Structure formats: structure tokens, C-alpha cells
Image (cartoon, rainbow, N blue to C red; front, side, top):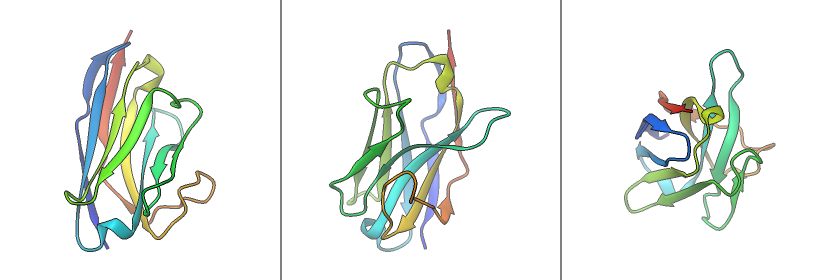
Length: 124
């Protein structure tokens, strides 16, 4: 099983950009579907994006579609979330997540491995 460590969070103004990274340790990273979830204060954790382990399918929540891009570098065991046109509503703790050989579809992606989270704050 992989272990996940996120980085790249911080404070950004509305309209700005941030890139989150998630470094995975362990074996067989390329066999894991990787994703990002977020949790705002007082709210439930929600799906943001996922990328299929085979690399060809990316799925996004409607709220971030067109603004966020998920990508992965299997040689570096890292998954990224490029966040553009940030909005105050994007403020949350962002979690990297993984599950081996999983679908990337939001309804079926049930990660069994989570990172510790990285805080993103977007000011208006």
C-alpha cells in the first residue's frame, strides 16, 4: 500500500493559481487511481478530481471543471492538482487519495489510502 504526502497549499487571492502535489511512497504507484478531495470547515468531504490508474481518464467535480487539472507523473510517484481561477469557495483542506485498480468515476471511487491534507485559503 502507498503512503501519501501532500504539499503546495497556502493563501492565494481570488483569481490566482496554486499547484498541489502528492508524493506517494511504496510500490506500484502506476496501478493506483489517484484523486483529490476537499473539506471546507463545517462541511462534508467532497470529491474534486480523479485520474484513472491507466492514465487516460480524468474526472472532475462540476464545481472545478475547466479550472482545475489533475495530472500524474508515474516516474516521480506524484500526482498534481493545478488550480486556476481560484474562488473563495475553493477554500478547504485538500486531501490526496488512492485506491488500486479503481474506477476514476466520482460515484465509484472509494479510496482506501489518504494523505494528511493541505490547507488552501482563497481570499476575496
